[in-house]
Amino acid sequence: MGKYIIQGGKTLSGVLPVSGAKNATLPILACTLIAEGTYFLNNVPALKDVEVMIKLLEHFGLKIEKIAQNSYKIINNGLQTLEAPYELVSIMRASFLVMGPLLAHRGEARVSMPGGCAIGNRPIDIHLKGFEQLGATIKTEHGFISAKAKNLIGKEIYLDFPTVTGTENLIMAAVLSKGITILNNAAREPEVEDLGNFLNKMGAKITGLGTDRIIIEGVEKLFPCEYNIIPDRIEAGTFLILSALTGGNIVVKGVNMEHLTSFKTKLEEIGINFKINGDEVQVQADLNNFKPTNIITLPYPGFPTDLQAQTIVLLAMIKGNSEMKETIFENRFRHVPELNRMGANIKIEGNVASINGPTNFQGAEVEATDLRAGACLVIAGLISSNTTILNNIEHIERGYENLVERLQAIGAEIKKSE
Ligand code: EPZ
Image (tube, rainbow, N blue to C red; front, side, top):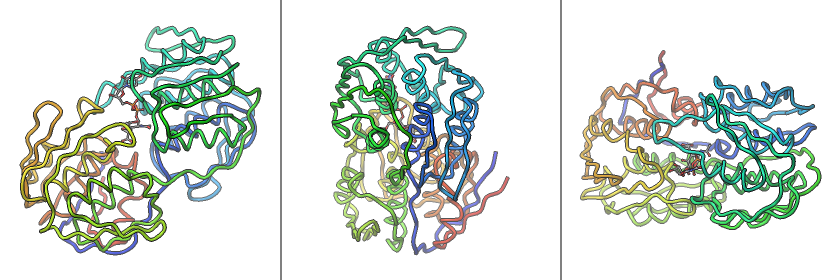
């Protein structure tokens, strides 16, 4: 497993460009299974998770060509199989997003049951219940989920939780169904909206995107298109936190601040001011004037769970006591023991982290336990007084494109070693 060697305390300044959104790219790539023809996708981030999804599409028989650093041509001339194998689904649970398009296009799918991961057991019961309500027969056997549907019939569905990939899977299953499907308590994330906009460009009829009530009128046929993926709001938030903690001389470029309203509000509560100039954002921050605050992670438009770990580093730098309550995943504080090893003073009680600052972060040998925990440890390493060795960086490279090169470009002393 690779590692990062980080020499903290450097002044960082310059432009940090934001990549395309990983969590919009994955459902949109899966969605190219839904109709034959040639697609062009732009602003696709160069990530390990994207490589896995591309491998999975090639497994189904699609031809995929990288035509530029972040652009792909995808040719779907028909599917050679309807089964997603264990070895690919087990690497990345978002592979389960192929279930919806396969059901819509071919009325059949067999996908290895996605496993849990470090942050929780990640059930898919809401996905499966929704497929059944649309008329699919679901069977779970030998670690595989098989779904069959002669034809899918539109239905009014209530989601017990506004699951992001569950909403995405059900939108894709419903777009070619007969009649109208209504998803109540649907996820409102911008990445769900991006998938819906992609499908509407293909000829789907979806309204209510970005709200908790999404209406899908089934159509006969869909046509491939060219599409530009939205910027990654989580990567943007990660970089804005880094900037706030290193003097605010970083210009984060390619941000859509409308996707970060709750995040912006909470950081303003702390005493951080945002300077927004089109898609370029800078933060003005004086560490000595930060005020402690309490944050609760919630489904969008609430505070994003994917920025929880990174924000805890920020809270640890504030004099006084702050709290972070994690309501989305049951085990998403695995970065806390690592941060405490670097000098933080954080206590966990149930789903609440109690953070006592300020912290004089010292470099240490630590490990990334999941994607966003890894990102938080990179930030902690960059503001520590000396050297941090961060292990298991494969987690980080799943979600942050060329992170080392981009950080080096703004003065960070960070290097990768095997
Ligand atoms: C998506 O995961 C994201 N992944 C996650 O990003 C993100 O943290 C999460 O949404 C929440 O915003 C992708 O989009 C590929 P959920 P997803 O279904 O869809 C419960 C990252 O760092 N649930 O919204 O798997 C589940 O237990 C990753 O980029 C059910 O109970 O999240 C969890 O507590 C990490 N039954 C909650 O919903 C279901 O059928 C949130 O899950 C589905 C979900």
